[in-house]
Length: 335
Image (cartoon, rainbow, N blue to C red; front, top):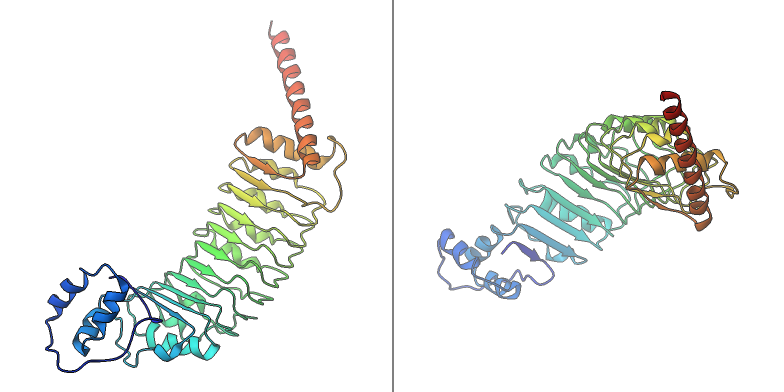
């Protein structure tokens, strides 16, 4: 048995049952195929409950914090804790009762719990690899000390009220989700995550631009920045040579930088309603850049309006024709 939902687990204890050695308990528990049977077994006596709790890897707590165990030694081998739809104080209580004593905890999900600030003791969870704080009421991350979590790889702060970010948000992050917030800018120091960050989601914010420091994210493979207020892109974007997904849809872009054609590893490029003006002919600089990129990244799927796709197709034909004419001229000179 690897998981336990505290919605169905009962804290009751029956008296008069002889204690069973721990090794035997573990062998018995491993034979259960039903969570309900395991929950019933857990209620037999204190020793059986303790034996079962020692095998639990995942605990899910929804709404009712009254079911929190009173002993801080509960679930000593827990690796995954999910707390949702609780109050701010309920989430804090769950952290102190379950998370902090769990030496092996590596995944903590605190979503839909009306958190207005990051619990101050989270930095004590040294082994934490995934932290989900989505769908709360976070307005800032001051005092969060997330950079003190040395093994944190996945940080989800989506669907909050964040208006700014601290200069340091992590050390070895691989996945950072900041979507659906109120961010007006990204710190230039975000480039310090360049050696590890692979996925960045800043969609559905109020970003007018992306920082030049973004170019330091040399390992980045996915960048989602749709539904913002972007009017231009930094030249440093072309340094993201590992980028395979880029979504810039629903913005106010005026043009594309010329060096954008260097992103030859792109497999998906989202440009639906990305520009502030209608692109009317195949001779525009933006269409030229996108046509050149389409030719150098043949595996790329471009998501855009039909008119833009048609203009790019026309421009690609023109570029191929020019290339063929140049090749024929060179062959003629060679004779």
